[in-house]
Structure formats: structure tokens, C-alpha cells
Length: 299
Image (cartoon, rainbow, N blue to C red; front, side, top):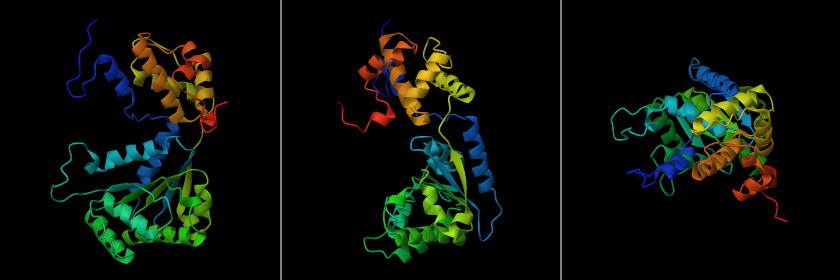
């Protein structure tokens, strides 16, 4: 069969399908949908001086950013691909940004202002940046902050960490809006060090998956997104167990693995994922290594 080319990407049919595997897809499994509803309820919370907040806690690569991105896309019209940033009366009900790698108020304000297309001056004081930031968020009618990669718990002194937490707390108090921070389990130690901060952040968890019926359902849902032309029946016992073992129960690892073996199935013409696809020999051939082995020197 002759291959056709996609005029936009310049890829043939096969490579276009492989390319499409990499597109982020929201998987609405039960736990993620429940947490998304909690964030939705928080967005609609009546304004008050001490707004409640959430701390979304999970292992690295276990879906925290995907969940926040999905929520932000639903509520932030400026994230739409065809949005005209030059239009009048811009509103940004939900503002998602990434926390700075170090606990520094200046870096926090700089990152937020850059995301809002209002970069600070070369020597603009932190207090000036904060005043501008408050005015901009008020003008945008922002009702919630989503702070991803909240992981500076390993950097800076406790005093610096406290100052950055106080800065976020001040912004929330001044605007009377809630916030959701997302981080790994160690983030809880940072949030719970201060009783005032601890009382404001309710922790919600995205735990690692277990080898159970919910994991099998997840696999069957993910199989549909791969769009292979033959059924793989990923929820079958042997395949499910191999996928669980190789992903270490982390959804990001699972998706990466499935995309690799699906790409191989597309290019080879097999059009399905089999037990042989997940053999150690084949996984090595496609460059896959178990997540716990990736940072060890090869023997």
C-alpha cells in the first residue's frame, strides 16, 4: 500500500501515527476524576480571608501535571490554541505556573510575571513586582492559582523556604483566592513545618497503582488511545502483569512504555502489543529500561 504524506507535518502515514502517540491525552480514571472535582469545588468556594487550599501529592511522573493541565485548559481561555492574546478584556480565571527551583520570592514573582507577559525590569524590587502581580491578577479576574513542581524542599534554608511560603500565602490572602500546589511526598514536610500553612492545605494523594481490576481498566482505556489496528487485550493477566512490573505502578512510565511498543508495532506492521513485545530482549532492543535501573551504570 502506497504511503501518503501529511502536508502539515511532512510525515508519511506510519510516522504520523507514531508522532500522534506522543500527544498528551487525558485519562479520566476514577481517582483523577475525584481529585479534579475537589479542585472544581475549591474554585467555586465563596471568597473569604483564609481560603482553603489543596496539596496534590504523588510520586514523580504519576499524573500530577497532567491533572493540573487538564483543569487549567478547561477553565483558562487563554490556553486555547486559537486565543487572541491581543483582545480586550482578557480574563484568566485559573493561573497555572511552575514553582521556582529555589525558595526565593524574587524568582517566584519573576516567573509569575513572565508567564503573564509582564516581565519585571532588570532591577525591579521584589515589593514592586508583588504590587504589579496583585494588580494584574485582579484585572484578569483570577480565581485560583495552580502551582506545579512545588519541589524546592531540598533547596535553600528553612528561613528562605518560609519566606516563599509566606509570599504565596500573602497573594492568596490579598486576592482571597485558593491555590493548589503539586509535589512529591516530601513536599508535605515543607507544608507541615508551619502550623498556619499546614492548616490551610488539605493533602490529596495520587498513589502508585496496584495490580488490580482498576489497573486492568486503565490498560483497556489506554489501549484505545494507541489506535492499533489489531486488539492487544492489554487487560489480560499476563500482559497486565508485565506492564505493571515494567512501569513500577507509575502512570507516566506506563504511558511511555506503551508508546514505545506501540510505535514498534506500527512500524513493523504487527499492529498489536503481545507478550513477546514485553520480553526483556525486546524491551532492551527498543531502549527501554526499568525505572529503578535508569540511573545505574550499565554492567
